[in-house]
Image (cartoon, rainbow, N blue to C red; front, side, top):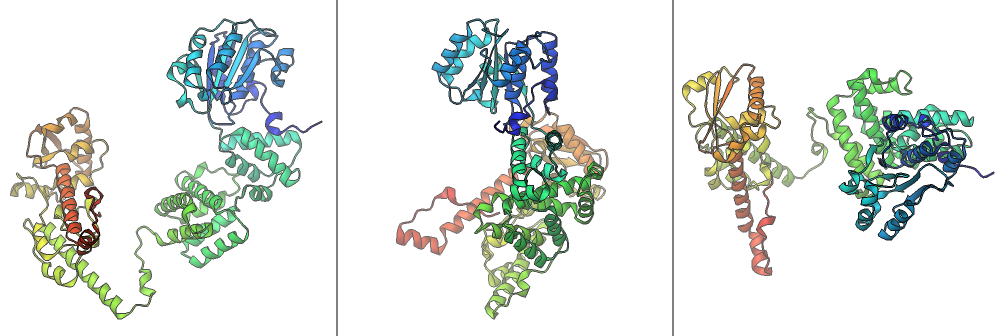
Length: 595
């Protein structure tokens, strides 16, 4: 007798045997028991979650010789024939290969005839989203009012492509992806029935690789049984899947925690010698970091029988949550960009070195300190540092004083030409601060530096009160950047602060933005302000003002930066030479200021 693969041998034959779709089973069971039968059903979900299986069980429930039931007997002629695929009144049609209007017309012409063997004719259209528009139109009327003896079951992995006119005529059931724990439990049950030994970690690896598909999991289990010689153990499954031993991952994380670059590279080379897939390694590393994050947040959620519980909790205790989030993001990006690396080993080790280099909140000496340099390099570096310090001093004083700050103009002019355009001081706020060394300004351009824009009605009395409210100086834009805002940020950025005291803040909203009022944003903005200052503060809003809002300030600054960037390009000697000597043409829209 020929061997039957596990995915077919263990296909559920009743609702009770179906795993992971309890919400659909409950609805169908109740409908069958109450004889509330619909004429069309739509099952949606990814591959291998049970759409075709549900269709066959439902067909047996409708045609079982014991009557319409939620528990078909499975032994009568109708049930046996449906399980074998030989029941003449149950038709499964692949819509991917029979998608034309002619195929649909032929099916509908046969549907009008009474059943030959069963109680109902059941038509199951798999991957129904593949039908053409004309085929969908041909079935609309029949699908809405089919003959009493016909039931339609539609299945698709992409319900977004099914016309709304079809969806509205069906009862829709969304089949979920199965959990890894549910899959591994079912695989354990299957192996017990097959009298085959297994290791729990091996089944967990298979369940994780199946990505929610029970059919894929059973197919992988078949492969693992063949690979391991009628046994399923961790070592063979890891080798089969290209997964790496979890101990390598924990060693990598411990080396990162210890800042041991030599150990990292040694472990990466050992993985290369074992021909481990570095794509799989990055995937497993990201998965492990996810488990560590869960162990940090909810340690009791890690099961006591988890094979790596102690190692997970140990890493969770030693690794900062901030670093953990950074490592997770680096692992994801490194896996995405692995194909762009010179080779997989370079991509993987670069990801590890990036994790080692990026340590939030830590100040480490630059690697340049260990690189030999000649005198010219040192002088250029010192000149750059002096220019940066001079520009920082000028910016700092511009922020402190209400008038333009002329200091450090000579220093900037004589020590270093910074490749940037002149930047208003208001643009120096944290969210909008350009990268200084990428712009160039001469000493003459520093006259454009402006002071932070404050409310025109801010008085000395207001400034005295501000000392009571966390040194608030009337700079509404700065305060907006510090507030914890959600949707209310749109209103905050389009408000002009007209007056404030210890209990009140009055704003002017431009007429063009008055639609932001009355949407509930005022209460959210007031809550954010009160949370920031730690006291009750009433916000008042009027329509009007000069329009000097944070949003308008940002718009002006961006326009100024764009103008300065265009001037810098147009006046650049090299660019002019290209234009004059080679007929080059500057595309204005391609000029973007660096920020």
